[in-house]
Length: 248
Image (cartoon, rainbow, N blue to C red; front, side, top):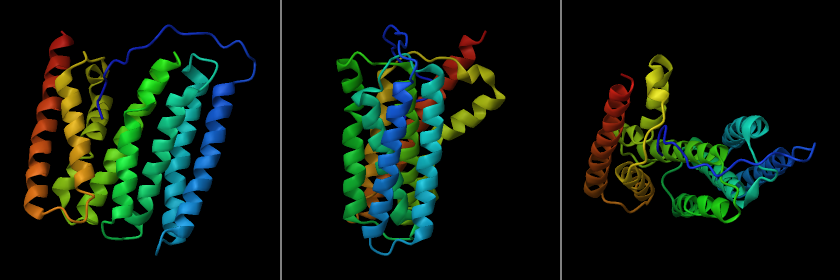
C-alpha cells in the first residue's frame, strides 16, 4: 500500500470506438461481483443481512468510483485482465467484511480468502504489462484496493483477533497520509520509486495476513505488530521529509 508513488505509464492510446468498452466491462465485472458477495453471504454461517448490505455498499461505492475514473482518464480501448484481477481482489476484500460485521472470530475460511487476495496482488500488474495495457488508472486502482484490503484486515485483527488498537493502526497510514495531503498540498507530489517502501508494504501485508490466522501466538503477533508499525513510521516519515524538502 504505497502512497503517491509515481506509476510507470506506457504510452497512451486513444479510444477509437464511440462505445466506452472499458466502462462497460467494468460494469459487467461489478455486477458479477455483487452476485458473488450475495451468494457468499447466503452460504457463510451466521452472517446476517446487515453485513451483506454493508459489504455490497462498500463494493458498490468502490466500483462506482472506479467506473468514473475509467470514463474520465483510462487511455485504452479495453479493460484488460490486469484490471479485472484487481476487481476480483476488491470482491474478495468485500467478502472479508461479512464475518467482520457479523462479529465472528478469526477463521481459516477468512484467512484463506485473504491469502488468495494477496496472491492475486502480484498478478494484476504482470497481466497489464503482458497485454500492454498499463495505465495510471490501473496503478491507482491497484493501490486503493490494497489500502482497503489492508484496512479490512487490520480492523478484523484488532476486533476479531483481539489484538487491539495497535493492530488497527496497521491499516490507517495510507488514509492518514491522504487526509494530511488535503491540508498540505505538497504531500500530493509524486515520489521516487524506492525499494524500501515496497519492502515495508510487503511487511505490512504479510503481518496483516498472519494476524488472520486463528493459531498465531500472542507474543509473535505483538512482535510483528510493533515491527510493522516501526517500518511504516520509517517509510512514511522518510517520504514526508523528502516531499517537504522538494517543495522548496
